Image (cartoon, rainbow, N blue to C red; front, side, top):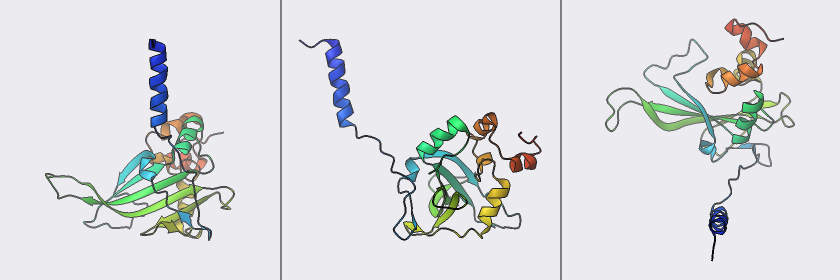
Length: 198
C-alpha cells in the first residue's frame, strides 16, 4: 500500500521527468566570421522597460511617426545585476524597436505596439572586444557585424550611462539596485547633480 509520502515522491518524480529543463543558451554566440547571432528567444528573457518616442538627439524630428522600444536582458545577467549592481561578462541587452499603432480593433485613443522595425544588441564580452562592450544592429538578418567603435553610440553610452556603459537610468527596477549598491557612474551622478561616489 502506498503511503502519502511515497505518492508525493512519485508525483514529484513524474512531474520532474515530464517537464523539460529550462536551458539558457550560452550567450553571446558568433558565427565563424565573427558576426553575432541574434538571440532567437530574447522575448523569453527578463523584460526591463519600454520607452516611447525616446531620442538622445534634440534635433531629431519624428513627425507623425511614433516608436516604442522594449529592452530585454539574458536571465543570468539580470540575476547577477540584482546581487551586485553591475553587469557580468556575457551580458546581452536587446533593444527591440516597434512602430506605434493608433488605429486598430476597438482602440479609440492612444497607441499600442505594432511590428518590429529594428533590433539592436549591446553585449559585454570582455575577451572579444577591447572596450569590453559592443553594439550590433539587426535589420532583417539573423546575424550582424559589430557596429564600428567610431559611431556615436559608444561615446554617448560612455558619457551618459548610469552603470557600465548601459542606460540603467531608464530601467526602473534596476536603478534603485545600482543606487543602493553604489555602482552608479561618476559621469551619470554629475549629470544628475548627485554627489560623486568615493
